[in-house]
Length: 87
Image (tube, rainbow, N blue to C red; front, top):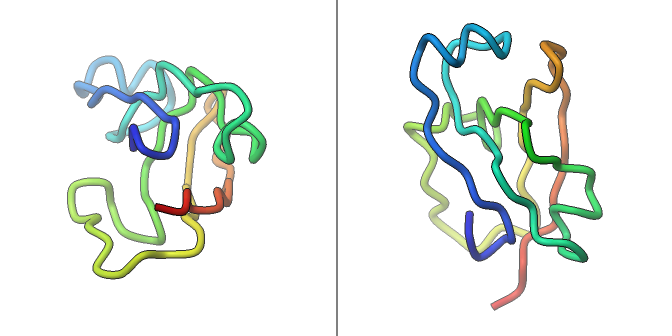
C-alpha cells in the first residue's frame, strides 16, 4: 500500500468493533496529491477488502489499472476506486 501513498495498520477486534467493522486495515496516512488522496481515501477509513477479496487474501497477480477498496468510514460502508500507480 505504501507504493500507492497509503499507510495502514492492521486492526485488532476490539478496535475494529468500535469503528463499525470486524476486520481490516486502518488508514493512518494518505499522501497528499496521490491517486488515493484524489479518490477520497482518508485517514480513519478502514479498508475491508480490495478488488472484492478480504485483506488477508489479497495479492495482485498482475499490474492492475485500479484498485477497488471497500471501506468503512464513520460506521458507513463505501466503495473507493483508486487508480494504480504506474511503475
